Length: 327
Image (cartoon, rainbow, N blue to C red; front, side):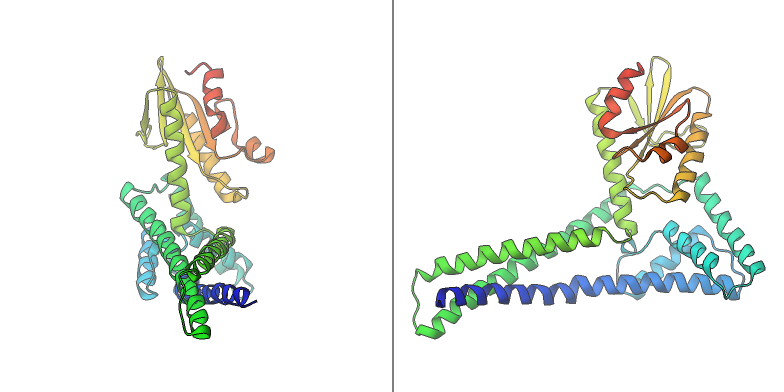
């Protein structure tokens, strides 16, 4: 019976220390991030309503960076500029405290910023991608270190409990301590994975969204390299910069990569459609491929596809290029 009490005590100590540590570090950071996002939204909305301020993309970026310093977090943890604009538009559209004339004026100002983004989509630079990847890896390392530290402390407490009972120490107890260590690591790792999965269902931050986008573009690049095709990355075509351009037998094929999830905002579908239509209208472009992680719903595909535009999941990219005779 004492063995079960000893093991249970060690695992319980590890669990409590992990939950306390998680809440004081990662949990506290999430709360600061939530408050910072709310502060950014409130600050810009107040200026638009009371001072007839016209938001600019660069101004929003500066506000994000300033609020990040104020709340002692990384600007990559906050919502992206586009997410903030969407939130502002929704708040204005749904507010009963704003007069109809003022609401129309504010919506027109926001639409001008959206038009600016549509004309020149914002791309993540390689240095920004490296920084965001480093921050993501650092968070993963911190959670792993917390799991190991609290598991070791739990194992030590279980051995100390046995020592205080008998006032002696036996080598055989190390096996029991090792069992507590392994069980604690397994339990805390499971909890960490569960928490990570729960957080991934929340609104993605700027860092999460951009890392996912960059990683998916890298996957598309690897797929093209396996096909041994000649391609260029972000070429300048008619003042537009698609993700990839394939040149084969005087044919030019454009590939745009989108790491879309299951739910795709209508505004994003509309902007993507306009952007793909602009690409397909450039002289010399024979076909435009929109490559996604999974095939979107039929209604989304119907809005996007045309004679020169095809929506292809990355698993079917190779066969799509071969079927159309591009490789």
